[in-house]
Length: 339
Image 1 (cartoon, one colour):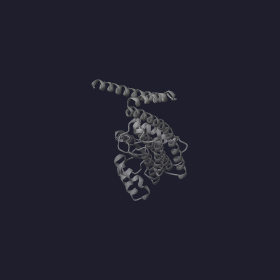
Image 2 (cartoon, helix red, strand yellow):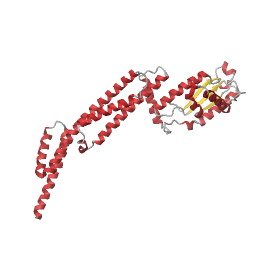
Image 3 (tube, helix red, strand yellow):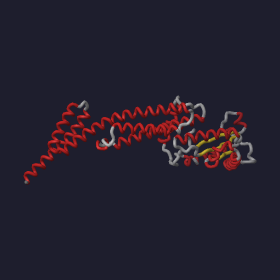
Image 4 (tube, helix red, strand yellow):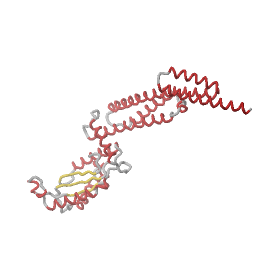
């Protein structure tokens, strides 16, 4: 219901103060859920008043319902208790007044044949109007973009997973909103960390780029980013500070564990880049003799390396140096002949 785009609020006989209280609470929770999932909270709200007993004041159906809704809005405007629902009532709501279905329905099993004719006419009219407006109430995000079925299903699945998570206290609607906010806040912090890590991987994609930042410098950079994210998102958590501290500790531990694996890979990458740089310098700076020496050193190191990946990288470097040496030799011979 909290993720729905079309909501029907069914009240008995008239909109009472308790109905407004429940609606106020629901709107507050729905807005919190919408913010957490980047969704418009309530797109269409119907106030369906059943057993309306004052047709002389406001007639049955949508016409009388809209007049009654405007009367209700005027009363809410004069009361400071229900300010959250004012915009919803003004912009995204309509009201429909339904008559009493009849004594036969009240005394019987609620069969259609027992309904009064005026009730059946109003019910048919309401259903037709509701179905006619469905196309305008396709679920949208906060940027007013329509959601696909796949996107909406993903959000419903995530919402269900949060509801099933025993770590969150969902004993009241307010705590539900706080739990959803905290979960999505931590998720956004993790996603931002992942994007930053991917940027570092992209920025060090070649051995030349890798050599611009040592392993120690990369470690400091990642630690600073983790501390920055934890500090930044800690202020966005709601509820009990002690529980939030536990959540932040777990988030930081998760980031540190992931960073440890990333730094291990980066350390190996940095060492390989150093070796490749040494081979390249030997080939270009020393010439043929330097290239041969570099080949010998590279082959010697490769023969004692413990991994296939290391050998493959070294053989690539050796092949490059050998090619450079051959080209240098061929150029030297050509120069002698020309002389």
